[in-house]
Image 1 (cartoon, rainbow, N blue to C red):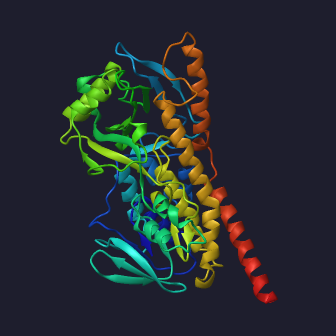
Image 2: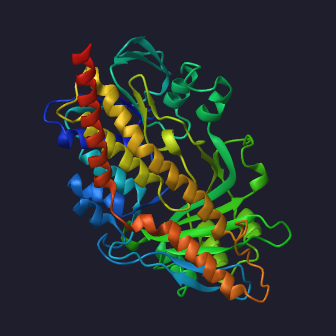
Image 3: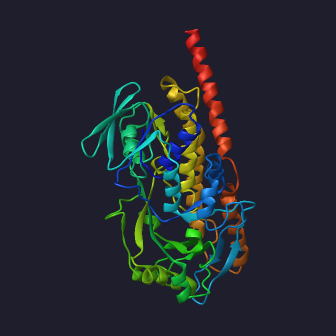
Length: 454
């Protein structure tokens, strides 16, 4: 069973359905009355597209992508904190595969369409906790006071995961220091809020026909307004095959990182808020933000960006965490959805493996954890560091101040940013599955030898 029918849960179901040589029934428990999507735009990089090919979904993905996944392209970075006008800092092109940018709902619709008949999606079922009834048997408790039993539980229930919370709160004290349980179980505010919106390209074109955001994947970088210096940057790229623009504007206060966020995590925002944060940015940014607020039927939404602190484990006692439940990260490498897809693919392949029976599921879950958790946490760390660079806020790097060698400092930071993006253009997701399969086979062989010796 899987708690959460978002991108990770759906990919898990599709993977098991594609590769299980036997009927494995899957229950996806979704808290809402439909499958909702957090955010709007989503980028799938080479590793995630490798998985889409394995699942036979690459052609469908290509049809809803702004640019073909097989073409060479990538983000254009601008130095934008200039009232008179910014300039293109550099253009990072991924060879031979650029990102597949699309509307998140289109990706979800493709996955839903390919969910196997062995999968049942149960709506309005918000998991609150689970109990271990006996070894290999879990009782799930839902907000509507109903219960269900399962042998294996996968937590794909996001940054506020009830599965993660229960997993860490019920761990033996010799596995994890009891004093750190809250650190692992509770989400942590990054000190950042993100203003998000999707709107028609046509509306921005009418306002500003030469705006750099109309056709390109743009990273508007620079320091915030001079009187407070809050780190800020904007990510903008076309979605819905180029008919809409996805905008995410970040405003950070590093002194608030790790504190409790007061109020609703998602709320409506105003043009005045955005204009104040970006008052020292170039005209293209100001017109983009004005289009975001004034040309839309709804105000942009303000999201308090939360993450999951680096976990010591992602599986225990027949329970596994995937995606944001395991490693919710800052979105500065556009990697969150891709990492959830990689988790789900590797775990799904392991659970569908012909050698896996109920009694050796823990071996499969351990192989999943050992292969996926370190890499996902590496991506999370790189994403955090890269975000500081977009904001010219990275200690020891260029801070946007001209000290007579600004061009040289920007070139150094450009090299550091591109180094952190390199993994996104490379393959490796299928190789991770093969590594996990090898560990699974070795673990099962070791277990058989121990049993025969006893």
